[in-house]
Length: 110
Image (cartoon, rainbow, N blue to C red; front, top):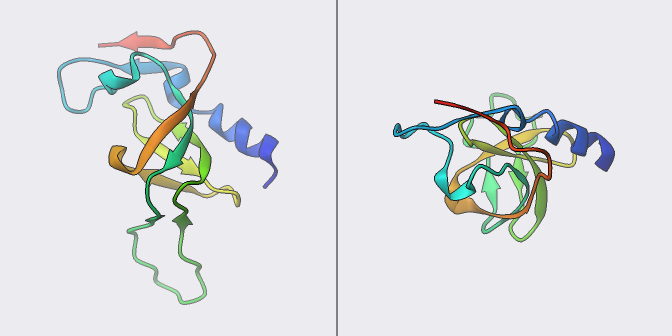
């Protein structure tokens, strides 16, 4: 997948349109301050925790110290977009945001 395709995929992030805030644990992360991550760098190697049912299916892995474009849902969940176009969900302790989207702030829903 070419970088322009990966960028286009990042631009489909639902968080660019709407974020959900409030007091619940499912609310958009306050530490983002209403911004939407565009790129992250991984603090460790991350592998998919989904079971692999066929030996011919390669394991999904994102590498430590590599910067990835990300897809972000309206609740702030982040997935790395891998070079082959696959996405891999990340937990906050696995990455640092290195770049934010410049678009207008998304609509806030409570």
